Structure formats: structure tokens, C-alpha cells
Length: 548
Ligand SMILES: [Fe+2]
Image (cartoon, rainbow, N blue to C red; front, top):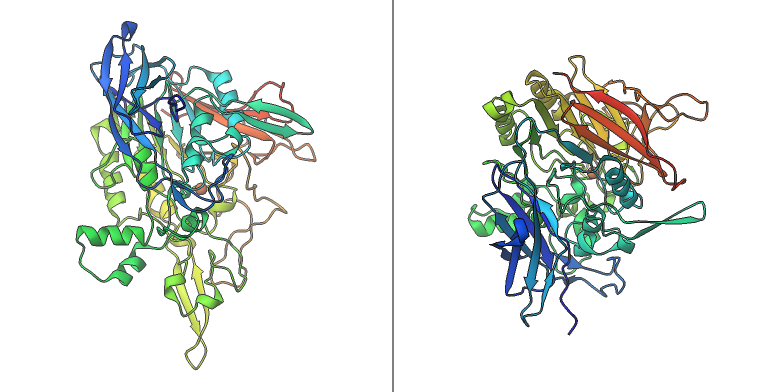
């Protein structure tokens, strides 16, 4: 029997003033899993173990030996609470897993720490939308080379593509899976202009805790033991529609039924230990890390195609063949978790923004996945509940099912942003459209989308127009920020267009971008790296300081 292996290196989660969780994964249940830590690794914390409940592989898994069909992939997660830690002092640690046959495997030795005390200068990496994209390993490798040591990571959603496909987290895609990239164990060969460069990512998570927001790619759709994982990912169904199909009381079994027949974030929630809110659990929460109060929102909707073709289950319409089959409707780009002014999430947010922890924090940062302002593709249509319009001919036959998204009903712009602004939030950080651009409100609240990590989905300015319907009731912005915000030109070294004019964005499949928040100065710096010139230097192209 081959000697046991760890599926990941250990990583740090949920630091408190005197503790931190150490988490790792194996492909065996094992009999004992421990963390050795402290001087000479003499102290021991014993882990608790659980099996991930929904991890699977299928024929689309990018593995050396692909699965012939949909199969369960058993993976065990180990978590130890390392307590009694001194403040602001790093201690060495390593983990050991013992298999049923008593063979054991240990990680290398890394370092851990409790949450930093106020006033401690920190460098916090801002990233999002890795999704196994070709440049992700290069991006994180250059980030670590440029700003090490990184004290924490804020990840604004879309960690992988299909969250129930285990290999996307652990071992797929020519060495470019999620954990390998953020643990410096990737081996991703990138070819540009005939030159091949191998990138390893960076050893970040072994030493620095990560806080994540849910993006649309953390959400799985209706559960099936038959259809492929890509199909299940795309098959999210609104909870209200699932509940209408169910029509039973809300006992625990019914809640499970509705979840399996709508959407879920189970794999994401099982993988990560995060702060929790009473109302939203891990899905939206707030925490203090050093001088930063971080508020994380669950603000994402399903992504659907903009096409108006008769066979499109899209943003703006249902498929013709489904007109009389509501069970097959997509319901447009419905919002997974309400955040409008009448919602539980909004009530929690309001309470959080009034809390002493928020008010006394030196830095007030909000992270979410969906862009309030963006030149990218996904800022249109508005972040609003789709309004369904059913057209019928005189005989009553359905001739069209359309969805409209009134701009006035954009809940981020109408409800959330004014609340954040009045509470003195300094930075709103997000992703989703795979580009870099930023905005600033008249009062000085900054908006930063730093998701140009791998493939870009473009910036929509001048002749580059979004694919939007023109014969609908609403007017959908083909270019620019749909709410009229003007992007801020990078302050140091903007990229230039074909006419040598500076551009207020980076939307590029060769040039990858990362940003870092330095709490010593309140400065957010963005860097770019051109993968066409593997030996070129990283260029700091933008910097701004949070308003005090
Ligand atoms: Fe996204």
C-alpha cells in the first residue's frame, strides 16, 4: 500500500485573540489527526474529523484519470483548535495524520498566530475570481514575491468554478487547483508567445488566515445523483419556486427537500471555518482583524446568458420549449440571498454598522461578490429581483416569458450603498467581472474591483458594448458604469490603449493584477504583471489611501 499523503497543506482559519483553527484534508478517514505546535513542537492539539458530504467527480473533472461518470469522492476534513496562544507572536506548527494501518504522514513546519492586536501593521492581500484560470498561479506567486509576508487574505468570491467537484479545490487542472495555488504547491505551465513558464502560486494560507465572500461559483444548483456537475451547477432554482412545488410544512425534512431542489453552499461552508452571524451563519458575517473591521455580505445572483435566442434560458427570457413547464424555468438572474431593505441580511448589516466593534475600528471594509459599480459585463442588468412578464396571444397561449431588472430597484445602489456611506465605510471591495477598476463616491468611499486575476470578461467602454436587449421596457447600459459613476484613473502607471491614451481599467488576458491593503498607512496598492514577459518586473500602477 502506498504511503499516506495529505490532500492539502494545513491552513489557518478563524483566529481569535488567543487561538486559531488549523484545517487540512486527506483521502482517508484515519484514526488520529493532530497539530504539534509551539517551541520544539512540544504541544499537541487533536483535530476533529468530518467527511465532506457532497464532493464528487465526473467526466468533466480535469484529472489524469477522469471519472467515467458521476461518482462520490470521499474526502475528510480535519480541524484542530489551537488555543492559549500569545498575542503577536508566531509559533511553529505541523500536522500529522495517522491512517487506519498506523502509517502516518506529516506536513512541513509552518507558523501560526492568534489574531493580531490593534495597531499592528498588516499587509492584506485582496483577491477574487481564481476559478482555476490560467494566470491564477502566476498572480499569487508574484503577489507573494512582491509583498511577503502576507498577514491575511480577503477573497471576494468565485474561488473555483463548480464547488462540488472536489478536484477543483485539490488536484485538478494541470496543477492549478484552488489550494495548490494559494499554498505554493501549484505546477501550472503557462505558454505565452511560444515560451513556457511554470508557476507554483504562493505559500500563503499555511501562514495567513483567509476570509471569503460567497460568489455565484460557490453555489450549487439542484442536487442530482445522475446528471453531470456542470449541469447541476447551472440548475439553481429559486427557493420560493421549490417551496411552491413542495407545499408541505417546514419540518427539517422539508427544509432539506427544498435545499436539494433549489441551491446550496454546502461544500463551501464545509471547507471553510468562518466567523458567523446569528441570521446568516457563515454566509454573511463581520469580524475584527487588527485595525480592520471586515463586513462580508452574501450578495450574488445566478449568472445566466444574455442571449435572446428562442432556446436561451437566460437573463432576459425563458426557453420557448419551457413556456408551459415552470419546473424548467430559470427564473432569470435571481438573487440567492435577499439584501434589500426589508431583508434579514439588511437588518443584520444595519445592526453591525451600529456596533461598537464597527464604530471604533480604524478601518471599515465591506467585501461582497457582486459589483455595485463596474465597467465590466456583470454590472448589467441591475442587481434587482427579476420582474417576470408573461405575454399571451388572444387565445391565452404564452408567446413570451421575459425578465426585466428595473435600475431603480438595484438593491445594492438603492439600499446598501447609502447605508454603508452613512456608516463611514472606507472601502467596498468586490469581484465578478474579471477586470480591475475603481470608483470613489462624492463623500470619499472607495469602490475597488480587483478581479483581473486570470481571464478577463472585458471592459465595456466606447465601441465595446455589452450584449443587452434593446426592445425591452428597461434601458440596459451597453457601456460604462450603469449607475453613471466615472472610473478613477490609476494614479501611478495606467496601461495605455492603441492611441497611447491612459485607460482607467485593466481587462486583460496576459496582464494579471493583485492589490494589497497596508494597514500601517491605510493605503491600497495595485500591481500588474505581464505574463508575456516572465522575467519582467511587477509594476505598481495604482495607489490610494482610505479616508480617515
Ligand atoms: Fe462571479
